[in-house]
Length: 481
Image 1: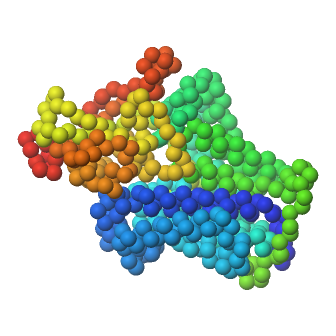
Image 2 (image 1 turned 180 degrees about the horizontal axis):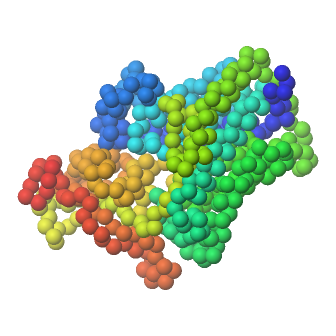
Image 3 (image 1 turned 135 degrees about the horizontal axis):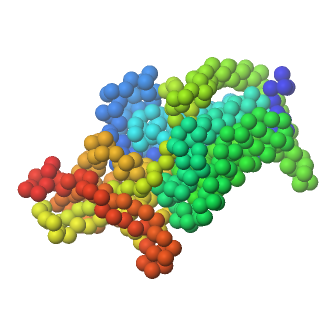
């Protein structure tokens, strides 16, 4: 059954698996650092309350067996430590069965977190990591040749990711069809990065070229992934270059990094080595029969589960970032089917005076990533994921009551809750918590080049309306509970 393996894949397996391990590491670190304020026993959407509503069948997770903040922290830090060990090469030093067990534990731990993460884990790249991590279990290690079937399943995953994203755009906002979406996107994306201001100020004809190139990359190039070599390598290289262009222009957690890692599984690294005159890579042994049988079984499972995402791709009502099973296997992907033309931001403020009145002194809380102080340049955080900052972007697009965690967030600030404050960049009340907290909605736009030179500000903002009226832990005449 040597046709089931690719002994010439060589360094591609190493690059791909190290990339997956690195992204796992980031994901577990994000969970360890942020869960207590967002999901903990006293979090904004507590896991214990969610577990009372969701069965194990609906959301498979270790936390159905037991939950405590200490146990969650142990799971997250165990995942981080194991990811770091695999990144350092542990999986290549042990037998195949042990390497598979390491990858399986990583997958089970991260899936357990995603399935209780609720709105904070409702991003497409969570399912993408779960699906890629599951396939990595069966890829083998340095001692065995990688299975050809798994390599093809990785191509199928990358195809669905890119082609699905292209279709959702083509079927979505008209600006994708008239090539004008990037007139707005760099300014209104969830979390701009240090270069987003410069990308936004590129000439409009170049923005139209960017959109057209995006359509080619996502709607035509993905078919090349299934072509013979070297054409598949060329298609993968285009995907990788496009992902790094996106990395330069925004903060999309690990989405672009993981997409680029997936594309490395398509590259013919042996041919590249021969072209560069590098020595041949060692040829690993073939897989044992039991592993080949597992690979065939997994391939059959993925083929069956592919019915739903394949049907979704051809549907006029294509669903974006949808999981069709609780294991997050063979999901559908896509982003920015509609583009926000105007940027709004929720700004949270506190005051010492319980009844500050119209002329009272309000001090602003500063978030790590999302825009706040107009003079503060956007920061680079990806592949690290600032979950609260991202959800604040969605909150600005909705009414107060569409985001039930907003009021609990204000209450945590009224208590100077340590876990919550760790998610922020600046707490204006370091010693004594505020008496009242409110939120206001602002319209933000990037400054022009002239405004930037004259004021030093990256943003111009204008007050739109009150978002959350002043609230206090002890009701007063000017505040509500």
